[in-house]
Image (tube, rainbow, N blue to C red):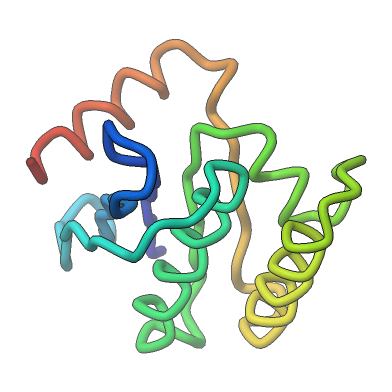
Length: 131
């Protein structure tokens, strides 16, 4: 099974790039990890942009069981289409992400670990190695 960890956040100053950190494992063996910088996006879109970047990376693992680990309950709602936001950019980007996820079929699942202390510690440790 492929496990992928992803986190996106804005840099310190408005109008600057966003940073995306990711790591992809197969059975505890690191396959790839990295850090990408994308052009500025409003903070409400950062998680969706990070998810989009990760899905592009995971394309080559299509056909395998994939679990994406996130630490962002709002992102999970946006991806699932259950967010109550009226922001049209968020709704459009969420639909785009759902369409990409649908291409993986039932082999791709998301897990939000924001309410699990031990999982959050592991998440932070894995993504800290990238920096």
